Image 1 (cartoon, rainbow, N blue to C red):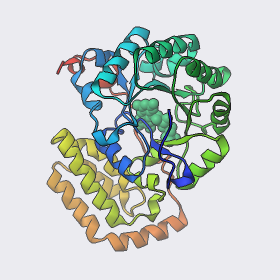
Image 2 (tube, rainbow, N blue to C red; image 1 turned 180 degrees about the vertical axis):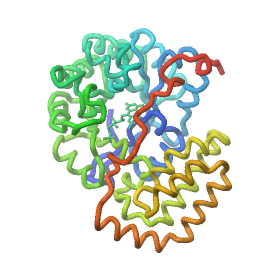
Image 3 (cartoon, rainbow, N blue to C red; image 1 turned 90 degrees about the horizontal axis):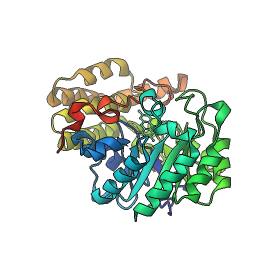
Amino acid sequence: MPVYGSEGAPGNVPVILAPMDGYSDLPFRKLCREYGSAMSYTEFVAVEAIRHGAKKALKMLDFDPSEQPQLSFQIFGPNESDIVEAAKRCEQMGAGIVDLNMGCSVPNVSGRGAGAGLLRDPAKIGRIFNAMSRALRIPVTGKIRIGWDAQSLNHVEVARVMQDNGAALIAVHGRTKEQKYTGHANWDAIAEVKQAVRIPVIGNGDVRRVEDIARMKAHTGCDGVMIARAAIGNPWIFSGRNREEVLLRDVTRLMRRHLEMNLRHYGDYGLILFRKYAARYIIGVPGAAELRRALVTAPSVDIFLDHLAGLESRADELDQQALEMRLRQPADPLTETLPEPSCAASRCELIPEALSVV
Ligand SMILES: Cc1cc2nc3c(=O)[nH]c(=O)nc-3n(C[C@H](O)[C@H](O)[C@H](O)COP(=O)(O)O)c2cc1C
């Protein structure tokens, strides 16, 4: 399948918002697409939850028609027939692409043979892709890590197996399951995958700044660059602007819009879900710690917006202070506090609430 979106993109390569549990929901995906993300990946959704029609799972698969055709529903599970069944349901629900997660490292996913757990059984991956690609008319793709641990790197083998069994594209996070999010992403391994297969390869891992996009493309030859952590609260990266180039008044304008989209999508709960983005939008703003506390504890939308208005009234002064702070010490978006991918129980495990059928 072609990956569109290189024209005018930073690094002349399509740049893509990564699937992220708790983050790559419809409002945030839409914003990132507007800023230039070339594809949409939903948060990963358990195949069992799709089979049961769990309300929360289906909400995670809500999409906007403007996201088509490069709209991928990401699923995960350990069981071949459940995966194929869920993939068929995704096609019926309007997915443009179905992507299988083979990278999730959290123990209650990988430990039961789903996510990165699948990497231990390349033959099974082959069977799953064979069955999915026969059963679906839309492209089937996968996102992998480079192996279970440093002693069992098998990215090239897995990529070939996927290609030989009908996968249309592969995204590679250049870390092992054991690494979780520590150490460095291995871009050489991404290059090895690119060399080994004919299908498009999307590189992922440790893209922090706009400059890293072209660097990853040059290092790996990849057909697309995928960004996760550095995009949270920073959709500007898709339009080729680093966060510090964005004026505070543009940040608050986008925060208002994002919050509004969240409220429309989730109702009142949209404010709670917006907190984690708010904390990231204000990275680098002088006095961010105090402001973060105020924003994430604001009990109502009105109070939240009051805090934002306070910020806006000091925007120019704060931009100036931020510039001076940065000259002393630049921020790193990958080391700022981020909740570990939580794989919230409602998503990965079939708790009764998650199973309430629509
Ligand atoms: C909060 C969080 C949630 C994530 N959820 C998913 C997910 O649902 N599916 C997936 O394939 N990867 C998920 N990932 C992994 C990212 O897609 C990506 O592979 C990883 O963060 C490395 O990219 P980065 O260095 O740009 O952050 C998640 C990562 C984070 C930080």
